[in-house]
Image 1 (spheres, helix red, strand yellow):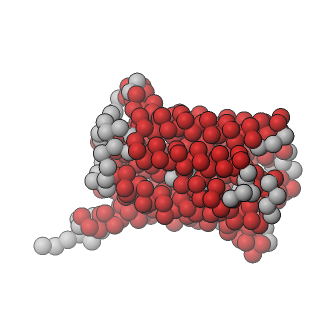
Image 2 (image 1 turned 120 degrees about the vertical axis):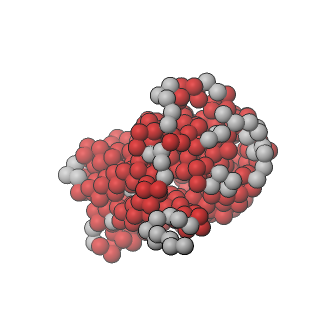
Image 3 (image 1 turned 60 degrees about the horizontal axis):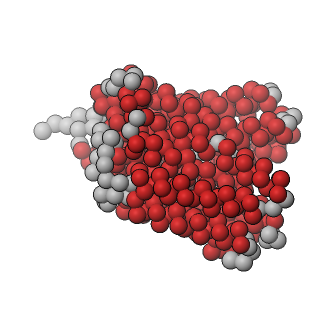
Amino acid sequence: MVTAPQELTSPVRARVVAVLALLLAAVNLRLAVTSVGPVLSEIRGGLGMSSSMAGLLTSVPAFCFAVLGLAAPRLARRFGAARVIIAGLAVLALGLALRPYAPGSVLFLLLSVVALAGIAVVNVLLPMIVKEQFPTQVGSMTGLYSVALNLGATLAAAATVPLTDAFGSWRLGLGCWALLALIALPAWLPLARTTTHASAQTNPTDLVRVSRHPVAWALAVYFGMQSTSAYVIIGWLPQIYRDAGLSADKAGLLFATTSFLGVPLGFALSALAGKMRSQSGIALVLGLFGIAGYLGLWWDPAAAPWLWAVLLGVVNTAFPLVLTMIGLRGSSPATVVRLSAFAQGVGYLLAIPGPILIGVLHDHTDGWRVPLALMVGLMIPQIIAGVAAGRDRQV
């Protein structure tokens, strides 16, 4: 029997190509966000960026992920998910390559939105690809691409400054991340050629129908609450430790510990969740870890800083858990993409005020106890929504 080497005739080869494409896309999903912070001072100096514009720059990702991701189901229905992901990666590469060379702050922000638009549609469509290509391995594959996402985010955060120093220019140090998006493009071409978009053929009213299902709302609230916690940890945890008297180096190491724990734990948790009929117990346990971590910080950040960092690292694995639940709760790839769009869209909107409110409360109370008490309280709706979303039922 003669095989066509250019086609995905072998199931094994097809799966390898799908895994590679999934991982290469996932690596790119936070580059546009985590590469900015390390060189924000240089960006502000080079562009004359005001403090208010810098604040807007740090808050715009969640808004873009919420609003622009809602277009993904319609685009997938018309063109096919793989083709839309290719377009999203191309748009991401374009935005990443051009924004460092923007002549002013406003254009830099707009080109950041371009890059984030590409990420937004890929964010929503990857759970559909997992459901479509790996219907019996949703948990393990979601965990695998969550690991790739975290590694990409960490790489951009850690390497942007060394790259800037090596190139002698923050513009090159920031713009070179476009190469990773370009590298990911070829891996998606076989999927675009050999898969159809029939699984995404839905009516425009389907997203509205999904929004009427209690599972969709449970997923959206859980996504929003875990995103709020994650953004607060990213934005404020190092400062909380520093204000408690810890050195900047130790605060950074503690934050890195919290972030890195999500890599192995996220994969293991998703794999476990995918094998269970209900994930409610996992959501409950993660919430209890979060309560313990935030209570520890509220009591005294310096009393057991490594313990608090580990507890918060565990609760951060709610992100791969909710992605896994989105894949499991949808009865088909078409339903999964609608659930993904709704849960991420509503969830990111819910997450926008959290880090801002924490900062406002800190400024008005001149301390962290009230903000941290709020975070303890927000773990309650996170647990309730997670338990509801984790029940063994499908949309």
